[in-house]
Length: 133
Image (cartoon, rainbow, N blue to C red; front, side, top):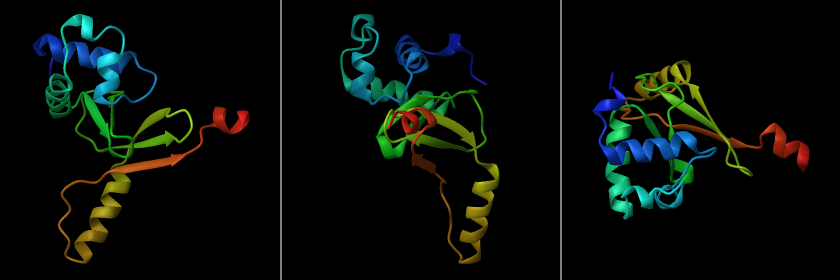
């Protein structure tokens, strides 16, 4: 388990932006979020480097369908995570997907397919957006 004191300054700034955001953010959105540039991060490449390490540490997840990143809600963890994403407001909820991952990898093994990673992203409308429509 990684301690916050072990993170670099840039990693702390990027993690703080994601933690304080109400939705997943792209690297470019992170740069514009909450004065990140004023804290010394000037380029997307710097953000991507920090994100890469934060993902490795289990503190951040990449949301493939949005090409964005979100702070882990119970970091760090080694269990697989899936996401429920509202198409309208982009509100994203992290879910544990152990049973789903087991089911998918078992099916893959049955057809002699080697699974490298399981990603589960479920999209739809959250209750708030559905009620306001």
